[in-house]
Image 1: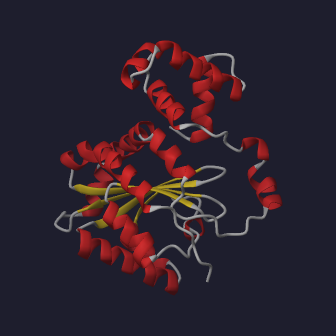
Image 2: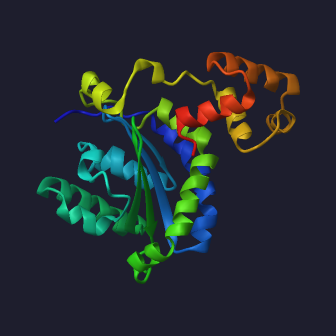
Length: 262
């Protein structure tokens, strides 16, 4: 069994609060009481953003129920939305036992039940959006099916609002690489090339990117961040050079492509 290396839990603590704030409206409007967002890469590494820090810590750091599985292998490429309690029953015995125990712990320890998963596949990663309800939610599957449009809309909003959080999580993945990646195979199947490796973004640039993608002007961004308009413009010009862009609109489009903001 491969031993996984985990990132500092302090980062997860910092990111969990803003994730929950993004989810607050959804929680207040529906019987959904918890949400988790996962990004799984070909090398087995994972970035995780959860609204419930304790539930994430229990799953990945204490029990590690699903840490030894490469999640994309468990789902067919055609699967988009799944009711997880039913899906895990068709997994192999070892995988099923671990997933069922993980779901049982979520239900019994945190009152997070009836997991429903949405899957987005990209060339270099797979995203998982998991929603939970309380145990007393009646007809949970019907609830999810009747709210697919709302959930899909929330997913888009979450990606936009958590753009800087996702970048930070990717820089400090909860689970470090543990799979041997056949680079030639990825190159052939997915069109992989080293030119697509993401340039490093500083914390201040993350803030400016986040404001810009949300539609703020340079002046509005400067006011929000407590810096000068000229400083914002300087950061933007430096990023244009780094990303080989001539216009701000081109830079924003490239950042969205690189970092999957939407």
